[in-house]
Image (cartoon, rainbow over all chains, first blue to last red):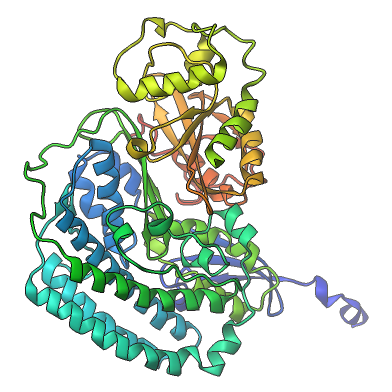
Length: 373
Length: 205
């Protein structure tokens, strides 16, 4: 009895297993937690439950046959992955892209970014215990899925871009539908703002909690909204302009605080910026071809290695390819943003309360198939 | 600006190599030779130079996808054509120099993009490629190093860039590259009992 009373309770920790099937991890991610009561002493994410080895698949098929794989990594912003891959191969093989095709790419990528952020928004608030916003967000997201389905033929795992262009031209009904949708979402954003962003419960759960410092972002290579929520003004669209992004006027939302709220605000502001880009792109949309005049039949990039990055919804998605001059890639490295963003979780979650750490994890916007590849 | 500064900072890592086999273009200053070679590569990447038979150290210093520049360049960071390649500076180092390079890059506030491997089975070598980028100014730096395929060992940089921890574990999973000093090289993406390295070119499922 005496021994029990004398025991230093602060020395007593236990292991808590979170996942791989846990609603807050949004997929098969496992986190091994060393807990001291409600506080996290050590957190170690365990990956690989949905690893499919896309990089090996890249080595055993022709360049064009890898295109469908792009939609199956980050299935919530598949368009960006399409864009990253075709941009890399176009750089390596020197393929020209008609202007209209680049505009269509930007429009669809930005629509996809909004749908990805809307899904994150709903799921994130769901993690925090608020169920209703998810239904509203899905209502809006549904409009985007319908629009993109009408041009790409798929609702989620898009395979829409081709080397040198896009698969299908957009028509007047798509343009009208997109304008209609932007009008609708503009009306809905103040509602989200009043219902969720200004909600005292949400603020109490996110403000001044889950800090990620600039230095941490640098050491772990965090990009996207995670870096921008830590005061880092870094967006590949501005930093390393690609496609026709330089032709549009848009801002990069940056918040200095580095807490979960800052990351939340970055994404909410990005929805508005994406809408601005889409509007300008629709206004300026040039006519002409959507594919190169001379069809791209067999792609054989010259020997060498090439790198190209795009801004996906979750950060900088980069592809490094090594070509040996044949019609199949020699090596294809896929740099997924959330892999790096999640790697800082162990350090950031140290000393946090478990529910706060789950809010932090939600604010990282994890998509597990993209981490595991 | 940043590029020139980094080129100079990283070229210091080559100082002790310069005593090794003299480059063919000995009368040219090392920096100029490097720039010249980089220029030559852009124009005629395919032409095999007459000076291809260099010492083993030179050979290793440019395991550069089999590209053979006209004259053997002095070792040092090479500027690349960004529009064609997607990165600005190509730095080929011996494995032992990699942590030092990482320290220089961290001091200049670079962030780590990724670490990966390439299996050059014909040359019996494994290449490790480190991608770095900068948040404020566009400057992509590639650090590469080659190691023996039978016993691939490279010192870790996970104590400098904590993010390298997972990237190195992944490279160990896929290629079996042993990162010396890494705290935990157990499989990350592969099953926990995996003893195979699927991205090696002779891997059979």
